[in-house]
Amino acid sequence: MELDLTTCEQARQTRDPRFDGRFYVGVKSTGIYCRPICPARLPKVENITFFRSAAAASEAGFRPCLRCRPEAAPGTPAWHGTSTTVTRALRLIQEGALDQSSVSALADRLGITSRHLGRLFRRHLGAPPLAVAKTRRLQFAKKLINETGLSMTEVAMAAGYGSVRRFNDHFRQVYGRPPSVLRAGAGPAAGDPLVIHLPYRAPYCWESIAAFLAKRAVPGVEWVSDGAWHRHIALDGQVGHIEVNDHPTEQALVCRLTLPSTAALYSLVERLRILFDLNADPREIDGTLSRDPVLQRLQHEHPGIRVPGGWDGFELAVRAIVGQQISVIGATTVMGRIAARFGERSGDVTLFPTPRQLMRAAPTDLPMPQARARAIIELAGAVTGGTVNLDRWVEADSLRESLIAIKGIGEWTAGYIALRVLSDPDAFLHSDLVLLKVAQRLYGDRNAAALLERSADWRPWRAYAGMHLWRAAAQLNG
Image (cartoon, rainbow, N blue to C red):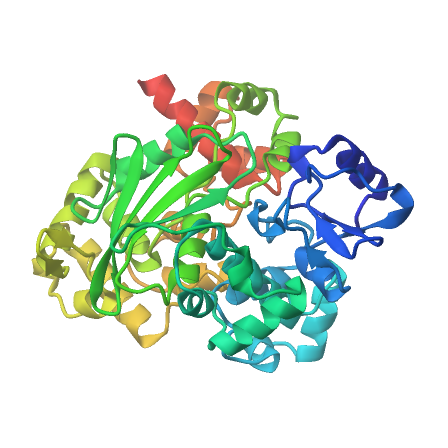
């Protein structure tokens, strides 16, 4: 991804928030790198240089600005301007692939050499994989120092350092001071939820994504109440709770996490970012979709539509199978019955069953047609045995092929699972009956082939076009 230097300079001069997180500004006279919205006095143009990522700035020897806090910038869309291999590698790094392993092992998982992986990262991100991973760890640790009262040991473990000594050494190397010096004050009292802010680029239609998840929430496991999304989760055999809501004044979601342990905190936060599509760039998406007059009108009516991900890939896949040929409300009811019968319970908390638990079920035990029940049981066995991989880093075509190989899973179901599990911004269900009906009313398209042809103009953001059309269909029917 090449930077447009003229555009970067204009964004820096105007402190344009639309470019926050899309590039970083290195100041040669101070050795500090900043976000383009940094409120500090603007340095002279001859004293600056631009970087495609925070990791590239750090690799060049610049320190993060303590005033604009680069770790608080909205995430950069992993797919924008990068190759498929880099996108998959970034997802693995976000899941901690380099915390306790090597670049060679990461490259092996991607089916390429470590040298080629390094070349791709330098070309697209301006920094090698290890530098990206180290910057990720440090930024998350800095965020925890600023926003929580976790001890430095807990911060180090949550950020994936493996030891407090490694954390302290890296922090001193980058910031020139120990991490404790940057702690603003006392954190929350013992037993209080951790509160973490996750920024996004405006506009962000929280009402839309909350409503979408509310209709599909598994009763007893996940719910939306008073505008806030809630979910029970399992961590190392213990139960935790997550609450997410939109911040009333900031461009951020507020996450309140009650956890038995903070060891998996980074992966939990990343899952929330994916679930709520916080890395999306409305400027890029709207610029493409607004060329279509119908979508331009829909964007104006509901700015900031996002594509919801899924908290758990297996649960989402089961939901897709259950939802075949029945209403959204009906599928939600069935999912609640499955959770109540096969899921683990801890007091009044219900957890959705794991693949291993459901693979032992008999088709007659599931409250649905037997063909659909057998498909779910076979899916559970395939996930347990590794035949189907529902991790986010797998290739979309590979995932769809493995799903369609299961009797009872067709093209639409496999496509829907891939859309939400992989968060592919260009996934589009052109054979979806609801999309076909609304496309006929809005465009006059008579079949799936016509809709697919039309959708070519919406690439690479067809998933967002689909969300707008789904919402339009609900309004037309309501």
